[in-house]
Every structure is written in structure tokens, then in C-alpha cells.
Length: 277
Image (cartoon, rainbow, N blue to C red; front, side):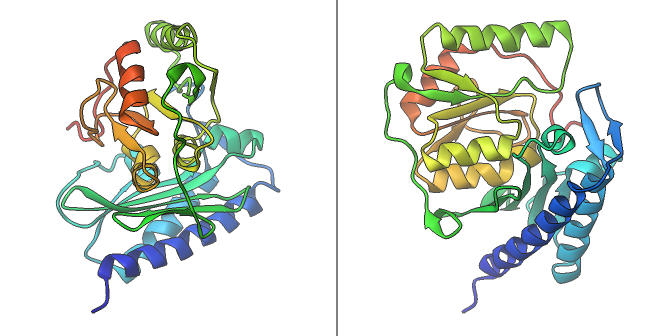
């Protein structure tokens, strides 16, 4: 009997490659950059074209499925998360990187059924790294199995986070204070690659012990969450509880011990939920 979600995953991998080709081609040309919520929240015509290609390609093959896409939401479509098979798409995760030609730019495609994530695909297209994870079937990069780091000591850990696109003084103050708290533990270091999806894949490869962020969106993390878990890691809320995909906050770590230690340190600030009406 054919596995229907595997059929979806194989097709999504093909579409992600096609999206990656579009992004690589666009990197060679002049680009039109527009602003969204703040001077640091950027969008380009390529984001919109790539998302439109991904959604129309998948819709044609799976017409009954639902979609939550970053640019569709920016254009006013509600992000309604139901039990229906749902594709959660970020056409270019790392748009600011893309604009500056900083090489960490990813296509992120997550897939959920009954609100449970089934698989995730992150194609870091400048590096040509295809990360995949399927519930219960493991995580891979270009076909090679992935495994998280075994480091259990936070003081020997490398941690990823992002500064986010909000420039509100209060939010900035909390973000910087959280970095200060972690550096004071001390940890080996903090890094910001500029793409939530790539950050999570780096946790899955074992290159870093954890990634945390408040203010991201479901399309930034849906695919990466499956990849981290399938590589033996964990995803959780920043308060240490279970991950809520719509809450705009996450800790992805190699283990409960490291994840909970980060949760203990960081101060939380509130963001409007992705599914807020």
C-alpha cells in the first residue's frame, strides 16, 4: 500500500529544488526590496514568486490540502491551522541574507496532518544542502543520516539565536539581555546565521547544541522542528513546556537538559500568535 505522506514528501522535495533554482538565479540579478513590519523586515519579488510557484505546484497535485504561507499571510490571508493536511511554507527563510547575498538562504516546507507535523524539508539552496525529516523515519542531509550533539554541559555548548526584525526598544532590550544571561553562564558562544530553518538544521547536524528565538513564525520552524526531532533532538516552548507551533517561540536543542537550562535563563516577551483572529 502506497504511503500517501511519502508521496507528498517526495513531491515537496522536488518543488523545493525548483524553488532553490529560482532563488539562485535571482541572486545573480538586481532585486527590488520592500519593507513589511519594520525597516529590518524585508521582502522581495522573489519571495512572492517562489511562494506562488510552490503553492500552485502543490495545489495542482493535492487540491484538497490547506496552506499557510509567509507571503500569503503578509498579503492578508489568515493562517488558520486545522486538522486538514496543511503545508506550512516559507519560500525564502533568510530574506535579509538573500538581499545581502549572505549565503544562508533556505526554502522551508513543513507538512502537518491533524495538527501533527509529519515531515519537513529545508533546502539551503546556496550551499545545495537538502535537509529532510519524516516522523519516525529519521533525518538526513543530502541522503546522509543526521544526529544531534551528545554534549550535555551547557558551559561547553554553542547556541544559536537571532536578533529578529523588531526594533522596539523594549523587545531589543529583552533580546540582548537574554544573550547576556546565556553568555554569563558561560556558554562557548552565541551565533546568528539569519535563518531559523538553517539554525534548526545545524542543531540536527550536531554542529551546535541549541537554537532559541521569540518572535519567529510557524513557517520559519515547522519543517526544522521535524528535522531536529528526527535527528534525536527536542523542540519545546521557551517556558520549558511543549512546543505550540502558533505561539511564535521555540527552543530546539540536542537534549532536554540543554533545552531546559536555556528555558530557565531567558525572559519571555509577548508576541501576537500566528493564529490570532
